[in-house]
Image 1 (cartoon, rainbow, N blue to C red):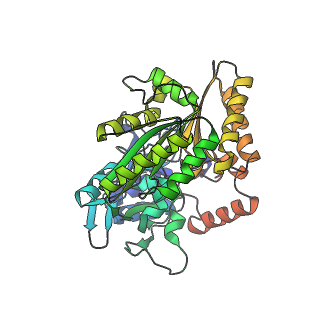
Image 2 (image 1 turned 60 degrees about the vertical axis):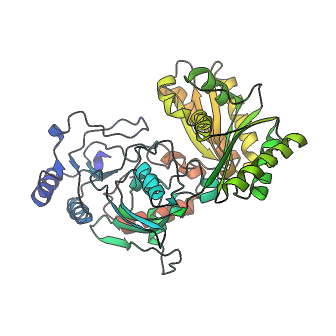
Image 3 (image 1 turned 135 degrees about the vertical axis):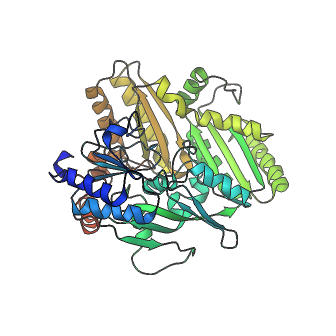
Length: 470
């Protein structure tokens, strides 16, 4: 990415300092031990400055200056991404919105919350509950990921099956384009059919088309009842039957349907401390099933009856119902265990991929067989949000090298391509997946994406090299 850094790079920093001052502009020698990379493990370079604006107007000033000097900018949120989009590389200016953390407004009549992009997801969830509402999007990184980053990657998480991805939680966006222009609006309407949809163009763009500064979020009625169960099932047909029957029959619908293959379940229970085994015996699949809604008592009664019926029919081999919030939290701790995998498998190769639901069992089978045959002694852990077609695969091979890592990636993405899946379900493309984006997107689609990028960022200053080649 160094080819984008012109000889006027120092002039850009001087102009930024003159316009915004040292409160906003931090020079490299003052960065200390500050982390400049996300969780992708793609190493950071040496940025020429760090910008920490406090207002949208300061973001606009900064980008106008960088654009005029052809100075590339790395856009950063909570640095919890897994694709390398937020990592700052050599010669770039790192732009962090960490100081823009205000919850601007909660509107209980419109059921909306307006926030600055640096607000952490968990703060939004808690503020919604305090107002008597619910913000359903949930990720394992809830305590550190920011709303701007979640918007930029169109993140999904645990409750997509009922509530949708981040795109479905956003009503309005304010963003700053590469030239400093401010676009979008903090609209609160669900219906807003007024020409090109800039909001949805910016969602999932990973900071390559504009810097999101404020967002209007859609709030949902707060569920008064949440019912959670851990189910053991004998085959994949039983898993899809449970999903279909639950979606059709539960009065609260299905708010989470997390499936764990034995590889994942056995590894987690054997290596993560203080976890309680929900069921006795071994099952081909373990499913964490959740439903939520406004009628707690009726929902809980129906949920128990629903599971009893499926047990009698043999669809479910065994089940445990959470009788308290603590029980439910214990179930979720098993599913959220990947947060500890970096220390358990520091050299693991992680994949976030999706397929048609009918193809998931075949995909998982082919992937685990490939790993076992090519790399005996390797681990291949499979789990995911099966209801939306998303599975996560974690591979840990003995004595892994860069060459082995690349071979593993080729094997996995080959299966994704063969089955018509997606190389990224919810983590984005960044720099790690841009070379395989063509397995999911056609040449004409890539050309259209390139044309959009050139139109909105003709000088290529915003997150260059992310998603598309620089």
